[in-house]
Amino acid sequence: MHNRIGFNRLGRKASHRKALHRNMVTSLFKHERIKTTKTKAMEIRKTAEKMITRAKVDSVHNRRIVAKAIWDKDILNKLFTEIAPRFTERPGGYTRVLKLGFRQGDAAEMVLLELVEKVNSEESSAKKSAEK
Image (cartoon, rainbow, N blue to C red; front, side, top):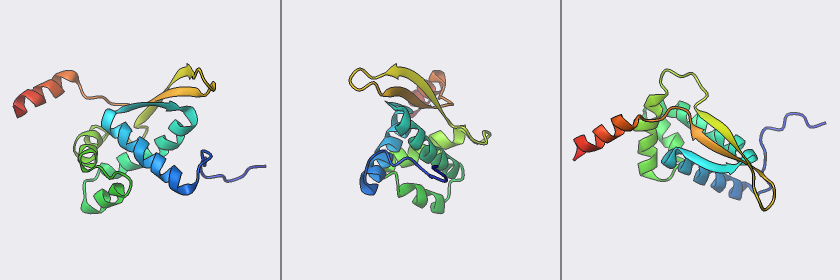
């Protein structure tokens, strides 16, 4: 009986797993969607949702806590200024997992992990033109 197992170790040592989480969460916030296996997506989702909840309140303390995992300052700034304000009214569930099928080589189930709310293309193009 497997009781109270807190997370999936993903078959990696702690340092490798920590680096994997850091890299995948950074990529998720950079591109706003990533293609990965289902098991990795479910673990990364937990980390990403906690970070977005932290980023809803932009304080030095919250920035430092999130900065432990996101080392890229541009992505950290994007999380606090662009991504988190989109979710201020939403109490949770910031990501979605879409099934893509099975990978050819090892038949691992592939999914698309993406943020739920997207920036409207008109808003982003108007913002870019205003910056110019």
